[in-house]
Structure formats: structure tokens, C-alpha cells
Image (cartoon, rainbow, N blue to C red):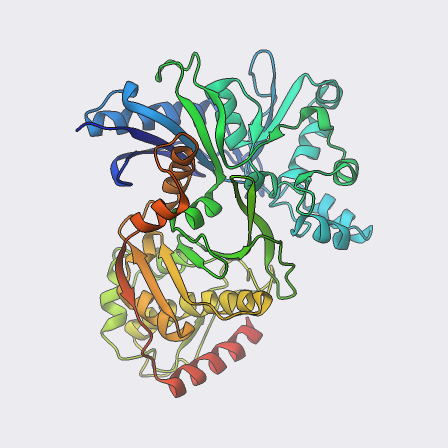
Length: 491
């Protein structure tokens, strides 16, 4: 094999994945390496930055070995990441002052509550498109500054660098302190309207500007590798993007009104809203999609907390299937759920309801209910949860959706994909390349370095593996949705 390769580093919550992408936009090798999540106290989740870096080294080395290539064949590097996870480190030594606080970490819940009670939520929502929640990076930064001895004084004079994981990885690769707008827009510190760090937000959260990275675009040469060890010096790091925005880009959802859903443990839905931010009145988040060539694309985002995790619960909690992939055949053995409705609010309800106190509920059980009916209801519950989000997004956008591009593990379930299409009344489309998160960062790096010339070239290279066209019964869908709404009210 000859030709240029782009390396995509997908740094996730449970592991790091390296993809090698050729100039025909084919993934020629991948390697995933897991690392440990640390739980010091209930509600607290941390990552050791050294363990993250070790997993990246092992993943890159493994991908190159799988491809039978060497690192000198890499022409550019893209990085995507678990967006809200963040840390501080010493600018001179590179030593982190504390483990990274993971997006799942809830230790700042009381501070978020204080900010809400102080009347700040409306301002924060207008400026950032986000809600006041421990999920986002800003309150985590505040906690680190307040709880690590000397951190605030050192950060104020510029001795410490702050960043999300894309920033830390880029700094380790190149020595440059930089992020992109998609990641900056998840911090509670970045104004969507000015596309810059906000003095008002920095003051509110008491985060010193001196610690913050430069906000570049999502596709540019930020720096070149130096002193990395497992990579030669001089490779341009040229693509940065948050993981879910990376999947939107990797799905070639470049036009307003295009949407993707990543079906994982939960489900993340993003909708391209074009060149201006679209405020949501229906429970969605407003975020930056990417900035390329001086043009910023925005998105609406909705999160469903439980998707594949509902199937895992049927497997591990109830034991009605042996492995997750068994769910499709079991559910397909009955024509419908037999009137059973399963609301998978096992950890509360996300968008558009945002009810952390909601709990899972199963209704409509009779003597005739079997495990197949429950399996079918579980798939329906996943699809209906996503249907709720997309209908809310369409209302915010003011235009109907044309199709939904899908990826993630559960996107391999044909029955679920068909049911999603029937409920939405639009096609669900599964691509040939399912590694869309990492692919997005690699494409951005290749755009900046001339591997690919334009979005049109990438759009033309995107290929669908299967299209699921809607053909559901209108009356059945109407009654299913009505039963779902009733069950949601009880959850």
C-alpha cells in the first residue's frame, strides 16, 4: 500500500482509538486501547492524564502495526475528544495539577444550583446555548482552582494551562496551547455570538483568562509534532473537533437541516442549523458544529441518556438475552410490542424533558406478555426517545427533516433502524464507514493539509451502506406515540 495516511486520534471516555485513513477516505486500520476510570467518591469521575497519553501511544502504535505501515507515512493528525472533560497542567513541566474531571463528574452540582438561585441561568443560556449543569467544563475549572492549593494564583499569572482533552493532547503533540470552537462552546466560558471567551462568563465562574487556550478553527495547522517519541517530528496536527460534532462532520452533514444520531450507551443527536446559532425553546442545546475556512456552522444537540444501555439492562439485569446482539432476533419474533410500552428512563430523562428524577417504567403488561414483547418495547422506547428529540429540533429549526444519518453500535440493528424511519417518517441512512467520530477529525486534518480539497470532495466520497425508508402504518404509529406520551407522564 502506498499513498498518504491521515491519523485520527479519538480520545474517549473509556479508551482511545487510532484510525488510519487513506486518501480515498477509507479506514485502513484501527486500534482501541482502554484505560481506567477513577471514582474517588460517589458522583466523582476522574481520568489520569498519563494513562490517557499511554493509551494514545498504544493505540497509534497498534494501528500502524495493523496496517503494516510506519509513522513516516502519516501526513496529518486530527484529534477528537470527550468534550467536557478538562484539566490544568504546568506550562513548563507539563505536569497536571490534578486528575482530569470527566464530563460525567457531578461534584459541582451545588455550585450550579447556587448560580441558578442567583438568577444567572438565563444569561448563561443566551450567551452559551447551554444550561447550568456540572456536565460542562466551566464549573469543573472553578472547582480545580478552588480546591488544588495554589492553583488559582498560578493560573492567574499564566503558570498553568487549562484545556479540554483535545487541548491537552495537542499540547503533548506540539507544545501549542489551542482548542477549536466546538470544544470551546462546551465550557460555559465561550460566547456563541462573538465566538470568543467571554469576560462576563469568566468573571461569573472565576476562571482567569491567562489560563485559557487560543481558539483556532476546526481545520488548520495548529503545530507540528515534536519530541513525541512514538511519532516523528514535523507531522502537522491540523484537525480538532468535539466527538459528537466530529460524527456530524464525518457523516458529511454539511448542509442546514441535515442530522445524525449516534447510538451508543446513550444517543446523541445533532442537527446542522447553518451559519447562525438557533436558540432552542424545546429543550435542546445550541452549540458550535465546526469552523472551517472562516465559516462557522452551528448545531442543535439533544441527548438521550439511555439507548444501548436499555439493551444491556435486559441482558444483565433481567437475563432475557445472552448478548446484546440477540435483541434484534428476539424482538423480531413478534409483530409488535403487544401493547407494552417501555420508557427507558433508567437514569432520568434527557432532552427534551430534562427530568433527572424520572425513572424507567413498563406499562401494558398482560398474561400474554413475553420476553419478546419486552424486547420489542425496549427497541421502540429507544426509537421513540430519539423521535421526541428530532421532532423538537425540527420545531426549533422551523423546517422538516429530510433524513437521519446513523452510526454507533446499535445502528447495526436493522429492526431498530426501520422502526426509527417509520416513526420519523423519513429515511434513516447507515454509512459504509461507521467510525464517524474519528473520521470527522481526520477529514478536518486532511482538509487543512491538502489531502482533500473541499467539502464537496468529502461529500462525494461519503457512501451509504443501507437506507431504511419509512413504511409504517399511520394509525399504528399514532396510537404508539399516544401510549408513549401517557407513559412518559408516569415515568
